[in-house]
Amino acid sequence: MLRLAAAALLLSVPASAAGPGTTAANFLKIGVGARPVAMGEAYVALADDVHAIHYNPAGLALLDRQEVSVMHNKYLEGVHEQFGAYAYPHWKYGTFAGAFTMLNVTPFEAYTPLDQPDGKVSATDIAVAGAWARQLPLWEKASVGVSGKFINSRLATYSASAGAIDAGFLWRDHEDDGLSLGAAIRNVGSPMTFIAEAFHLPLSLHAGFGYRGGVPGWDDASYSFMVEGAARRDGDPYASAGFEFRPVDAFSLRAGYLGRADTGIGLSGGIGFTSLEKGFVADWFPELSLDYAFVEFGQLSYTHRISVSFRFGVPKGEKREGATRKPPKFHHLIRY
Image (cartoon, rainbow, N blue to C red; front, top):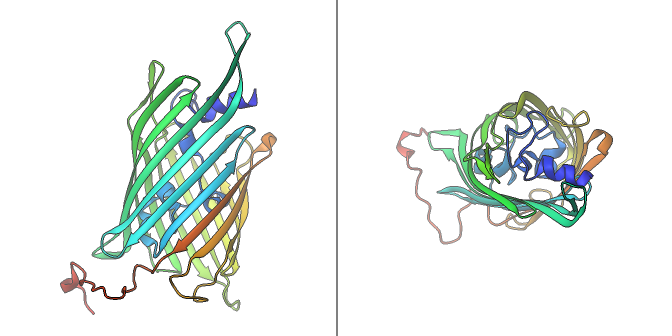
């Protein structure tokens, strides 16, 4: 019975806790990446890794190296989510990225209207995205990004498809520490026609701020906190907040609050480990990150996410051997 409810509420049947019957493809609202999820998904003003393709595509412009991330989400009973993303930052043309999300329900018993067994059915949702982002040429502290995605939902023998666009803006006062501001609009797209009715996608608008800083008297320690507000088509506005503390570069402690939780009080937490400290080996050497997040779900206990990320390649700001870089397009306007 729980699997049937999960399929109805989270997958193909258009429903939501805040506004039943108002939107489709609600799997798009489930957070991806253990790091953002551990921080309450308050990521629109941080978005400094490949998971920006989901939260704020403008953040992809901040990436300095190629990055790959995969995630497994052990969601509700019989419901699992898989996510993968890749980003390639180019020093001239901006950052290009792609992502794949799949949510599926293991086969469960189906019944006829007369409550007679009718075999087993399953449900699957898929979204494939491509994105581009770059820093603004005359305003290097700001970046913009856009993502386009194809969405398909299937429940038993019924299916529906749609296209959608995300767009975002990000401003950072400094490359590492300082204030950051972000805004993004998600799931602007065509309705999904499921069986005989058309339903809108879960459109939402997000804006927030964050701050990064060091800890006085504690070398290598740093912290980040984020606050975010969101307005959505299928429910009331909500707020979220997140915090990350790094006692050393290689280890992180995280906590968060998500105000749109359908059950429970929306608390989350997690840890992260980075294999190599910056500068420990050559810049081109791969860097491995392993992240874990749990989300409190009230009577449904907890959900768990594990992400593995790799960063590799020559940093985009470095000059490759034998390559020549042209001056910026607007170099005559820049004062040196």
